[in-house]
Length: 157
Image (cartoon, rainbow, N blue to C red):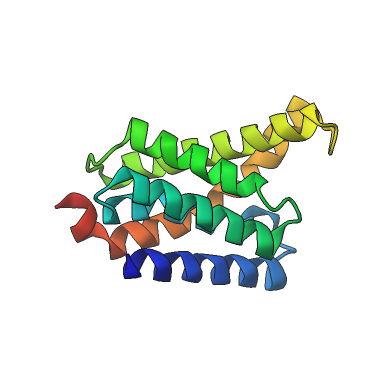
């Protein structure tokens, strides 16, 4: 549990630093907290604790980065359900981890796209969505590889 809390706080801190100092580099759009949800999955024995932790992480994320207050809490909960349903406690290699992280990023952004367009908060076309999506991969894949190398024993054992 301590490792999970530490990882989430480091992810939020790094995400904030990247947004503040590297905002001119479009290809480093971070979703580090979302990526960390995948790696903390292995630290929880009980699903309920993992889901509560992800919901709380999303609410903290909303308080720090957005003004939606519950939106990311619910989205992080949906993503955590997806992680548990698809991966569970299976151990994946580096390439499959990267592919799954890309899948998570696409699903998260797709859900945001659908919610924003449904409530007319921010309207943009599907082509714009695809164009914007490419900015999320580089930095998050690098962060995922670093986390994989740090937690390799825990993930593969």
